[in-house]
Amino acid sequence: MGKDGFNLVVVANRLPVDMSVADDGTVSWQRSPGGLVTALEPVMQSADGAWVGWAGSPGLEADPFDADDMRLVPVTLSAGEVERYYEGFSNDTLWPLYHDVIAPPAFHRQWWDTYRKVNQRFAEAAAEQAADGAMVWVQDYQLQLVPGMLRRLRPDLKIGFFDHIPFPPLEIFQQLPWRRQVVEGLLGADLIGFQRAGDAANFSRAVRRLTDLTTRGQMIQVPADGDLPARAVRAAPFPISIDSKRFDELARTPEVQARAKEIRKDLGDPKIVMLGVDRLDYTKGIRHRIKAYGELLQDGSLDPAECTLVQVASPSRENVGAYQELREHVEVLVGRINGEYGEIGHSAIHYLHHSYPPEEMAALYLAADVMLVTSLRDGMNLVAKEYVAARSDDAGVLVLSEFTGAADELSGAVLVNPHDIDGMKDAILRAATMDPKEQRKRMRRLRRKVLTDDVAKWSSRFLTTLAIPQAGDQTGSDDARGDATAAAHRRDLASHDRG
Ligand SMILES: O=P(O)(O)OC[C@H]1O[C@H](O[C@H]2O[C@H](CO)[C@@H](O)[C@H](O)[C@H]2O)[C@H](O)[C@@H](O)[C@@H]1O
Ligand SMILES: O=c1ccn([C@@H]2O[C@H](COP(=O)(O)OP(=O)(O)O)[C@@H](O)[C@H]2O)c(=O)[nH]1
Image 1 (cartoon, helix red, strand yellow):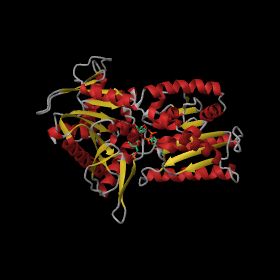
Image 2 (cartoon, protein in one colour):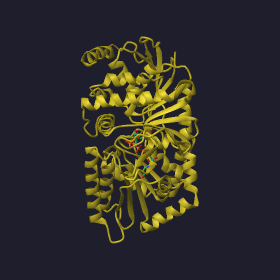
Image 3 (cartoon, helix red, strand yellow):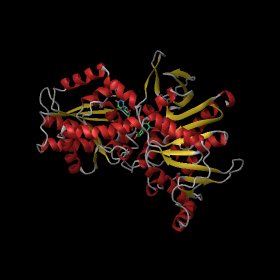
Image 4 (cartoon, protein in one colour):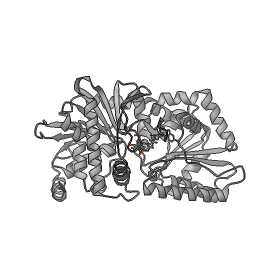
């Protein structure tokens, strides 16, 4: 598009809305699920930019359109591409691989071929929308090849990439047959952002071991390639956040406050309400959480007449086998505990397989004495931050897994290792019985952090860093110098890599 294009183009697998077409041809859309959309929506609403992404239905072709103060540019994916690129390579290969192989990743060459082809389509769509010298901000693991592809199409652009999920340790990442191509794809960006410092360090180590490049602190030197000049790439942490003020204000509205009271009343006014809110995903530790809660009821530490657990498990990736199995397991477990400890008019667990709008989420947060975030691995976990932003009453306790990006930031939470069921039981009990003074002390600390470091700060930190030339950064330690073992491994691994 060149001169007439947008100065900021966001490229993400999903648009913020999922479009669907009814049998009679009527087009409708709903908000897309997940934290990526929650975080980027306010950024794009306040920028004069375009958002390139899939509209959520296979085969759907649509022209660019405006919604909620944003210019949205749909990319079409066929049913086969959704199966191989989205459900297959993205969510049955990369997702489990990048989340500590909690489920076994599947490696299929056809999925990889489609992943490459679809990434090329997103790169072309972004190239089409961007003005001369514009910034293009590519999002997440579904589009890791886009930076490299886009650089070849439009060397004039400033290209940023943000990884919303963990970047795994080399020992896990190197299982991927196409590991070198993925690293090279990411290195097409000028700036690569991660949730945690540990993710950025894992990536730099993968660069050293899988390519001939050297790293120095956050900087990676990429040599000239044909017409493309030599460049410096920065890999650094940029922990994501939420629109804290908006959430805080939403939770203070009389409607949300009244709804929170109504929720508690409808639950039978129990003494303690616990809450879990997750996509129904095996990374979220839903089974571990329910097991710990069930054991607390069983051993009498919690009285089923006095407490209840509300578990929102919003539908996600329902065509992927591991997600179908998880649903079976969770629902059997919930049924067993409710059968054992429920009474007429009172359930031990209120299990809700639905997706709710932000107003209802805010009311649920306000109604909950204890918020349970027990992920086995999670890039950030915005639910944890939303709970804090909603609690202007300084009450409530956040129980938070050590394996979330949020745990690196949120001191004031009660941290847990979800694999340690006894430890988690102790933490849940401690949270359920914590005196209001300590709750207030912890919540104030949490709120200071969440209200200060909001999503606007995240995006402006990232985009400001992207805007400055990346060359010549000498900060940090010299990870590459003298690393003979790394060089030997690199040669060894490179000789095994294809193409
Ligand atoms: O698009 P879906 O396949 O339905 O999945 C929803 C999103 O899930 C993931 O969210 C991640 O991003 C959050 C914000 O940075 C972060 O808090 C969370 O820990 C991550 O899991 C995924 O990364 C997104 O691409 C999906 O859209
Ligand atoms: O019924 C629901 C369940 C979740 N969410 C939102 O989905 C996001 C989940 O983000 P998180 O980072 O916690 O996890 P992800 O699903 O992205 O892995 C949060 O903004 C939630 O408020 C929602 O709007 N309705």
